[in-house]
Length: 71
Image 1: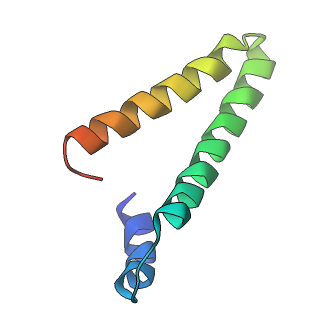
Image 2: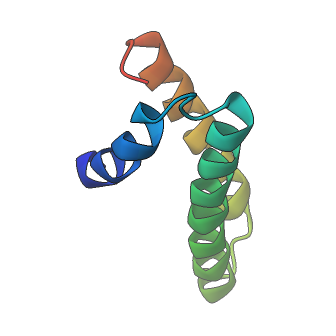
């Protein structure tokens, strides 16, 4: 994760930095990637509830990180 944040840092450093909409797009790309892997796993095991749980876990973890002030 630190490598990803370091890769984005030069973009954020340029004025005006990343806008909220751009941050949302970055988060959505990562969310879509995680959900894609969860969906593949759920299909392989026959348990699509895994897919829904993945979304819940991601959102919960994002809230935890935000609450800790590390966002």
